[in-house]
Amino acid sequence: MLRTQRVLGVAQQHLEQVAGQTQQARAERDRLEAQLETRERELEKERQALADMEQLAEQKEQNLGELRGRLLDTQVQLDRSRTEIEALKRRVQQQAARPVIVKRPPPAPAAKPVIEKRPAPAPAAKPVIEKQSPPAPAVKPVSPRQGFTLRFASATALDRLVAAESVTLYAMADQQAWRLSMDAGQPTVVRASFPGWFHEMAAVTVPAHYIHSLGNVANGPRQSSVVWGVQLPAATKAAIASLTRGQQGGALVIRGNGQVIQEE
View 1: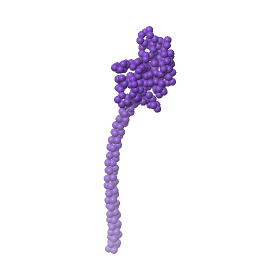
View 2: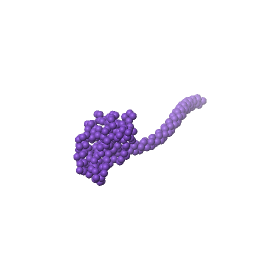
View 3: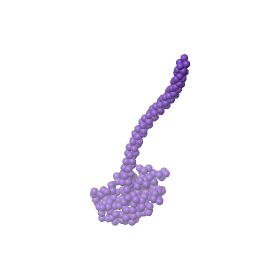
View 4: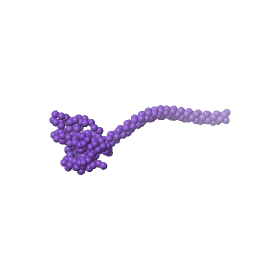
């Protein structure tokens, strides 16, 4: 009986030890299950956050594609505008590079070709604009009967002569006249008496800065009705007369120093 009681006590101790270990195992299992549940919730949150980020990235990629398309269209339009502006600048430079005095044909085939000196129209008359195409600077007369053409060597040459007051530049319309001069390198416009005589200039060869200055004048004339003309100094007129004497035709060029040469 004593032996049995000892064995039973030992067995009871083992049972209590096993019960304690079982309880610890259950507690550990509960702790691990709680951690697993927490990790699963965190993982679900991260999956949802990742899905939201992917959706946002897809939307941003779509917006970026649309923006790239608009930028490409804008770049194409900008390149086209630059090309048009460069072409316009070249045309303006070509037109304004060499201001041309309008060529007048001789009154009769037998008469000596000269550059016509135009008197001012009668008070009741209005200046008449003759629509003419400006002669190309590099083109020479095809026939001696074409007479002479007269132009300035460049817009800079005209500016120098106007600034030095050697050449007087007028804009005329409806019996009114404006005198254009240079002040500190910029054109200025003032009202003036209608000139008694002038050499008419081809409007398309008048430098753009003179046209813009006239356009900024209050109550100024309409550009389409303006007749442009210049008064040349006596020395220039004498040089022109000397070069045209005994000649059938040609192209005369007025340089920035007032010298007149005949273009070959």
